Length: 362
Ligand SMILES: Cc1ncc(COP(=O)(O)O)c(C=O)c1O
Image 1 (cartoon, helix red, strand yellow):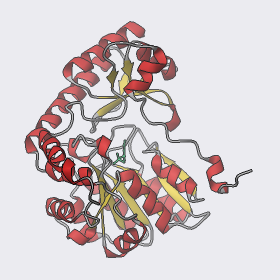
Image 2 (image 1 turned 90 degrees about the vertical axis):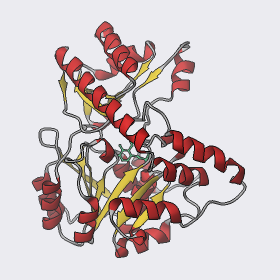
Image 3 (image 1 turned 120 degrees about the vertical axis):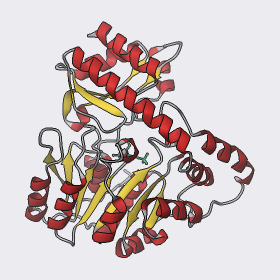
Image 4 (image 1 turned 180 degrees about the vertical axis):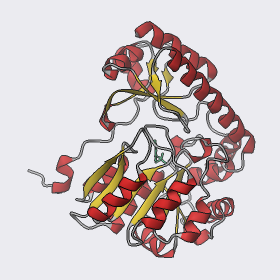
């Protein structure tokens, strides 16, 4: 018998949105499949990033820049922090994993908003920690309960995503400041802002300001969402010296590949692609919310590139029916929401096709 860590026994694998090819193969479907399951950018990759990738292909015999020098410089200017306070990861999931690995001991308590992005829990369990969930209140992060519970459980790390996946809801700067002021300074707070760029400018939190004020926060962002680079795996974190020193110890050499670095550097400056992506998403959110409301469904107000709505029935049945008609959405029963479906905004025609098909299958 091959032995493995006890901590891994209770872990359920992360379930990603189904890839198009897998659905085609499984169901024998032909023709175009619409995937609205993984919060990807329907406009595709930024043209500037594409150009950067193509012109870097000839350098793939070389190791990438281990320091991510240019990208860190660019990110630090954008957020208003020092370069040494930026770390780049193989997707933000790598950073979540490294934070949990570095700052916990076996049996430590970790706190998460429930529901929230599932990878934090998985990392916690992998590291032998107890993951305590604080339910959302009216679909938003319960700040007071999180503060109270963090003391009660003596939590090492407190995690929340803002806006929240899978709800799409958000809390404002004032609430985050309120939390940061009251939480014990020895606890690390992870603020995961994967959907930050989809928020309006007024709703966005000033992450640079938070970082300058609080030594115990790590803010995470990703290039997988509005920047359209999910397939390259690249995300980043910002944190102060003490945390950064530790995170740099556990970072594997060359953790971010060469194409991802070049593409991210180009995508971050592609303001046309960004504004078009935001505009398309705003229209998509408005259309999906209004159409679903009209059909009588409750939709959580969304500040992201997806909407979660209550089908009022077993959502896995609706999911399967949609899938058999070539539309992949995301059931979120693994987040404890059995009657909810999460749908990413697509192109205008994809969104229309989704609503039309949903009407047929309901
Ligand atoms: C809140 C949140 N954080 C992180 C991620 C993962 O980002 P990345 O692709 O950079 O690993 C996701 C992806 O869905 C997410 O929703």
